[in-house]
Amino acid sequence: MVSRRFAHRARTVVRLDEPTGNLDALTSELVLERMFVAVREHTRAAVVVATHDLGAARYCDRVFVLKDGNLQPWE
Image (cartoon, rainbow, N blue to C red):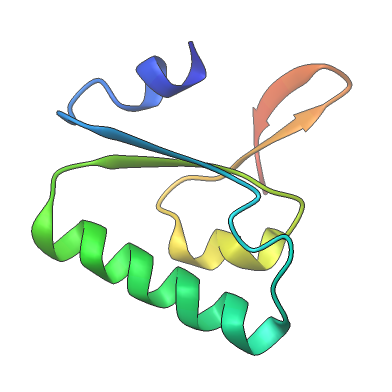
């Protein structure tokens, strides 16, 4: 449901669940950089990331957090 709401203009939704959870900081940075560059340059996909790493937020156009059971914009 969340994916559909944020991806209404995209043809494809890429869902990532903790994509850097088992990686060291340097590898995490490389993976996120390459992944988001590839998506932006070659697709119109919407990327929905579920993560505890808010450092990944700098690659996203919009960021939401789950707080007290509610999805809200991250400020």
